[in-house]
Image (cartoon, rainbow over all chains, first blue to last red; front, side, top):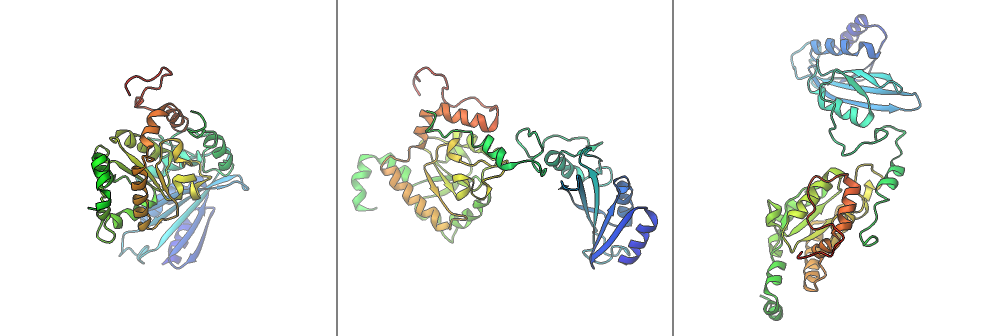
Length: 169
Length: 189
């Protein structure tokens, strides 16, 4: 049944690479324009749960990678019938223009994930209704999860410069 | 009651009563809080040492900071500490409040907690065993006896520098200062 889903995806979408690293796992890489359509397709096929949305900073390749992990709660579905089958959907977006379309229209639970990625990687999700700070307390010049954010220098500049109380009585 | 301590009881009954009934605020910070439920329940039973968890800072006089302190948690810690009644004692539990521990180069974790609130004692280790809490409590008894557990007095005296450090870490604080921060000699604090 992995095979049939693979064929279906390949026949429906162009420029899509599908590998099956394990029995229960399908990895799909696609162009960023196709992602919303693929997500909708997979949701209709039975993958009704977005388990995780995360980002990776590939600084050598000059791009961010968004990674959607989809699973299913339907046990009797013919596509997702096997328990634990999940799909990893990956796409790359350029580092200079970190823009993506929001997926909250398809999976409402993507909202906190997108807020987190917006805050920690600085990727802007167009159409997201509430891209407000979620975790961090203060503004950073570079979002702290990017690879060019120098944590040690930052720690020295910010926390290292706070004097101990004995020193500045 | 220990007969040797009768003179101490007669000299300073309030201090002795305070010392043997430490009420720890049940404040969960980081991973160290996982050691606290076995400490306060049947397995290690902290009540043998007079330590009992309480729900609000208004009823507490012992503050266990159990693990790494993120910048956001620091705000809550300061507010909790300022609400506690004196005399109040703080103990940093685990190596993260001491110097950042394994989060020494993290962008969002406080490195030295004693820059922001006064600490009376440290328990080093990652994680310390529950027994270490009892060792800390008995050490705290000694410190209280010798009047060396004076964190709340230091906080009052150096409030200006503590407040300045808190503002450096957190930006503008949205609560009024607990004590006067003006340069004039303080009146009836």
